[in-house]
Length: 303
Length: 303
Image 1 (cartoon, rainbow over the protein chains, first blue to last red):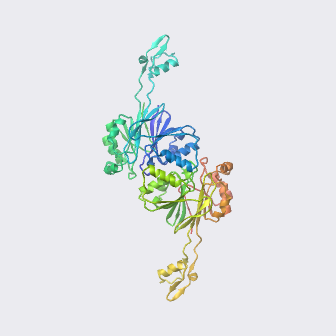
Image 2: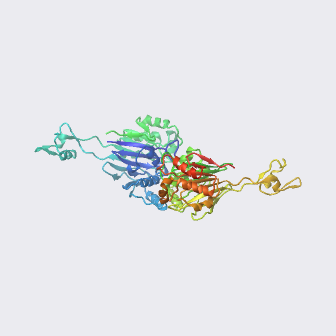
Image 3: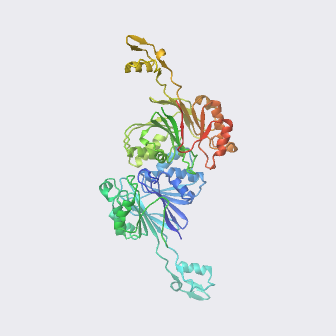
């Protein structure tokens, strides 16, 4: 089952060098979750052939323009494409008002409901749950209220030991075993622990943008399979990073190392860097399994 | 002196096939006027090497998203680029509220003043004037309040008959002649009409998007050098055009013909058309001097 992140935009503040502002899509078993939605996100979705009405829920980290200004156009396009399915929209206080005023002056009524859920930037809390994932907020420290998002696969059914299961065991019997119960087969009880085993652990993805270097977030994202952490500057501009409540590549790598994550993806690059190699190199010296977020690239997490 | 239009975006409703939503820049003698500002306009300005802080004034036809959703990002970028010069922003009622609420929730204060001027969609009135142009509204008929814009070069100084002017005539004398006054040279009066002639007529550009086929606008745009008229559909979809308050290529050409303009530029193409040739061909059968608006193309009007 697929668990993969596709990068749609990766630049900070201003689009430059073909790099779009922040946006990405997490796909978990054919369900799409959009994370941030900078200007041009719908153009990028079109480019990378992701059907916009497959997006089930949207998560906005904060209300700086480079993280949400593509949203209104996307909502309009979802409508023009005939969406009727509800959309879950998680964002800081204010976004509902921003959308409502724009619908008012364009005399528009969307053909689908939006469920607005205000995020909590103070503590890590569960904000979303469906049959595939849970999503918790990750408190971040930026110039305005801001949080990241921690996605975890839902606990899966137990796996059957196929070689031991009687070939004519009923479907009801198989479902019972998968759910952790015993099954009955020809007046015998098949004990669950003899016929099933625990699947691999739940896969996880943590999105952390924008934030000053914040070691306190390590505990929340401990051991995730994939971490995206902003890396607006190189360590040469560490002071500037702190002043603007951003991080360096080196600091992002320290967080990855301390949280013992499997892979680190760096993004939210300042327009001052055309060539991103130095940024990647400084991260790799601290955390070798570091990668650059590049538009159109996909990071898969295996089962 | 330059008088030229550069196309930044030309698609209707949804970006598609590399076509961006409506936006264009008129340059008159090194001064830039932005007309509509669909999502991605700042990306297009960057692509076509137009410095965003050279934009002096912005004109928004109506508040459908494909005509203004690039504005907030552009205003932020102007700020990040250090703008202090005032910006004149002409738009229907509502845009000021839309911008103000977004500045509020991003805790932003722009480093330059914006002068909001609400447009009048009911009649053609002068809404802007500087030393280079005048701008009048063009009432259009769309699903929501909407107007186009008529740009006219300001009346120019008179041209000097260089072969007749004494070579040592003072600068003050030359300025007087250019301004239409007589000049004094060695106790003689140089009569203005003997030493100057009227320059060519004032160049003009009319922007008409979005609108149903509206013959009443012919009078306002009579004889302009360059007309942009929306052509969302081909004549095959004329009924659909009327239902959605849009025009066909053929109808745009009829307006151009009736107004006796010099050149017609067609734009605001429906996403249903990948190949735009049929749209251009139907316009040319009515008005041969028709062209397609293509991103990055420039239409110059000679002096």
